[in-house]
Each structure stands twice: as C-alpha cells, then as structure tokens.
Amino acid sequence: MSHPWHQLFVPSRVWPQAVLLAIGIIALAAVIKPAAEPPKAVNNPLVYGDGTSVTDGYWSVLCIDSVAYLRILTPQGQTVVSKYRQNGLVERCDPPVGE
Image (tube, rainbow, N blue to C red; front, side):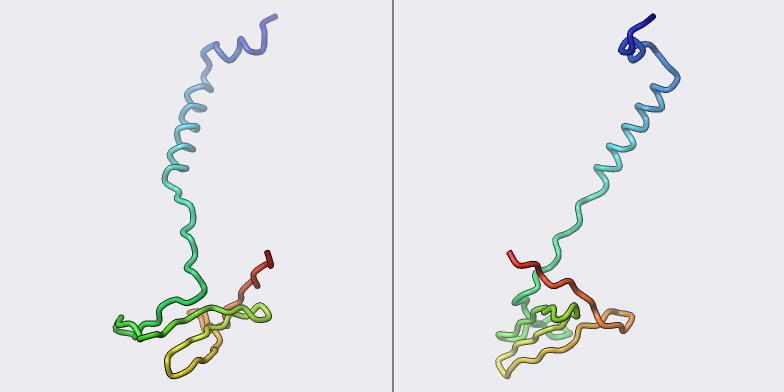
C-alpha cells in the first residue's frame, strides 16, 4: 500500500491539465485590474461644456433618502438638482455609513 503523498510525485495524465489551469488562473489575475477608485463626491471643479473651468465653481454629490442629487456652487449662488442616469431614471445611491 502506497502513501497518499507518493501519488503526487507519480506522473499522471491530470498533471499537465492542472498546470495549464494554474497558469491560466495566474494570467487571468494579471489581466484583471482592481476597480478604479470612484471619483470624490465633494468639491469637484465645475467646467463648461467646452472644458474651460468656472471660476470658483464646484459640484458635489449628495445622497438624500437614497436619491442622488448634485449640489452646484458658483460665485452667483448654489442649486441642488436631481442626478439622472443616461436612461432618464433618477440615480439611486447608498447613504454613507457613519464612522
């Protein structure tokens, strides 16, 4: 009767497949990058459609009752508007958890 560890060192038809599977997993892990850090939600610079910045203009994302809102600040004042998705639905959000 042979020891179970002895079977690991005996050539087998399964070993090449196992090695290829391990190499594939390592290659896949190298290709998959971690998710990009989401943009900050407070005091982002406000820009016009042509890319020029609005002097002292900022925008922030607010989460009120699980609905996302944009707070837009300019030297002339501020406004809060609902944030919409590309499909026209209101953007939902998860309120931040207190620390």
